[in-house]
Image (cartoon, rainbow, N blue to C red):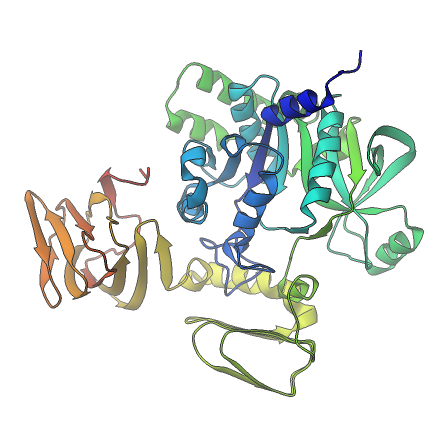
Length: 490
């Protein structure tokens, strides 16, 4: 019997819907502005808000904030917590952390286990953290229809009508003779065929045919259903899922769960499950969408000047056309460029033709093999309490400028390999060093010996700035033992 109170039914579905924001990006596509520890989702693209904040606001139209789960890893979680501080109380215990990256299928399985622990009838809305979507009402309508289909045990994805012969996306062909559900002008269909990323000729044929859609990488399904399909099509991953569920049910330590997860193979949810499942369904959507996959794709979402240029920062331009120029701090002057990308940051600069922007990830791979720090993080690194900037480093030493926000404080910690010397250059510092607690003003300094518990905090109303000089045989950020921390870090 149909529900005689559809509004109550919609409210009940919303209460069971858990948006899962996939936020474990590698930071390769928008290098040098993005880095491994500062991926694309943390950038402002097409808006004054960062991509992950745009995504958070988008899913809040579909479910309460307390239902939102963030799927990421430990190093990136710290920056994401800063970005999502407006919802810190709702999200405090909602981070699902991968100990190591294992592609989308294991990450989604881990999130599904968490959803089932909270609600045995829970539904999942899986969305990447770094896409641009325009049309909130249309997005919510698509999710509402997909949720109804998911209630019938379908695995639902959203299809995007192609606007060009794109070779960088997978395609979906629906069976338009089989309508699974309707809502307003939207229809849901069974998936007839998934198509891998095509060559240019095939992409042109798909566009002309008009019956193929881009695979958006967004999904809606029951948590129980996706785990059932993983068991059906990926028995190896299913063993890891069952082991984690058993460990979780018995209250095993997090380290045991992490060790079990590391046993999972790297599997994509598309190729590993969706393309094999008889339950796959698709909702063609009307909202505008871009995965913003490279510097060149800014053409789809950013504002251009009359010459077709996208200019950010201190750019002096003479007679350039259809180019993208990004200046972080320094003045960047360009003359007579056409269809070019120029990106300047304090420690790295990129120059390439726009049509080669996809190859930026190859540059990052080279830097990674070289062990170059420029692939990993910026010289200025944001932290929950403020930031630090590496000013100079060499064998046995590193010099930083550290800023601490008013009322902020670092963890109570020690280092095994290095000593530190702090000089206050602005504001006032409160220092814990062993059993001592004292304050320092501008021009005053103190030394922190190796193996000494210490803490730096800002008791004032102005931002605290210090110069920190580190000395020792190893100066990595992982040489830290935290005893007490205000931000939940271990």
